[in-house]
Amino acid sequence: MPRYSYRAVTPAGDVSSGELEAANESEIVERLRDQGLLPMQIAQALGVATGPRASRPARPGWFAPRNVTRDNVLGITRELATLLRAGLPLDRALELLITLAPSQPAAVMLQGIRDEVRGGKSLSQALDARREIFSRFYVNIVRAGEAGGALGTVLQRLADTMERTKELRDSVRSALIYPTILIFVAVASVMVLLIYVVPQFQSTFAQAGKALPIPTQIVIVVGTFLRNWWWVLIPVVGLIALAFRRRGRIPSVRRARDARMLRMPLVGDLIAKVEVARFARTLATLLANGVTLLGALSIVRDTMGNVVLAGALDGVTAKLREGKGFGRPLAETDLFPRLATQMILVGEESGRLEEMLGRVADVYDREVATAIKRFLAVLEPVLILGLAVMVGGIVFSILLGVMGMSELVI
Image (cartoon, rainbow, N blue to C red):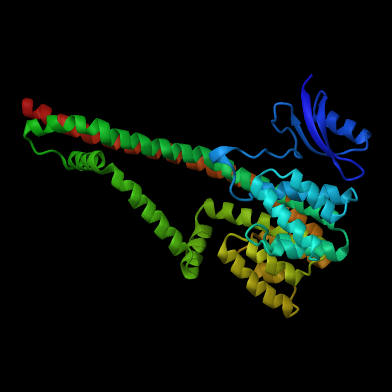
């Protein structure tokens, strides 16, 4: 039977730790609760986390985290919600979180927040001073929870929303792993052919004394350049990436680029669905916690990654102020999927906008998964075919030169 180490909070607000043998983590949780303890971290005795409440230990040496990560914020949010709902005062809960911090930067951040709270500031004010870590969305949710006197419940909802957003982001990233590997293999294969294989034929072709076909000449020139000057590509690629990133910060350039992305086949559909899922879930969370629709739209705009879709919300907000509603102006932008706008319109007319936004988010979470599968179904054979064409082109150009030498011998 495996052995688990745990850290839990006693009814008096103290931290209790130890080890227990159990069949699984759920049994540990039940046994701790039977003892009147509130489990916060549960890990196998070897130190590998096994549950959602387990936090990762700080990595030593060069791999120690230097900043507070999104995963750190998610774990802190969920643990703080658990402590507050258990009845602990805010400063005591923050004190416990410092001892449970997953990394040194997180512990330092929590110490600063605790000190400011003890100094008379509200939690939202302390978080607002750390905008590089906590977004405007996060701060406004906490502020709404403080105003409603239900901070623990609001933080629990916030943690759930962050968890679903993380799952959506991770699903997109996971889907891109295989295409990235294929692209790397394609580039590596072509580089090996050009740098090591093609030069082997160069001296042979030179001794033949016959003009080579143009494709063969091109391949030999490229191979010679890469063999002697391959290191030049590193700074060149770096400079190109830096220039592309800086140009992307220019509003007009980014807007044009995002507009092109939305018009691209398959990719545009995937981007729109990801943005709609994030938009709907964030807006539903804000409305559920008492933020007004106008204020929520202003906050949601900052969370969207595509500036074209975000900019469309400015017109929707202006019409909402004029009393023209929300769903219809959103549909008139012709940028958001029709299904989403119709569901939002129905929710607005029936007085269940918050509920309908949650359904929209669920629907488009599933749509994103389907769009990813469709995108990969097209991308994978295209990448494989592209690799075959590049490698085949190089081999064919070499064969053209060999065939020319054969004719010379005859």
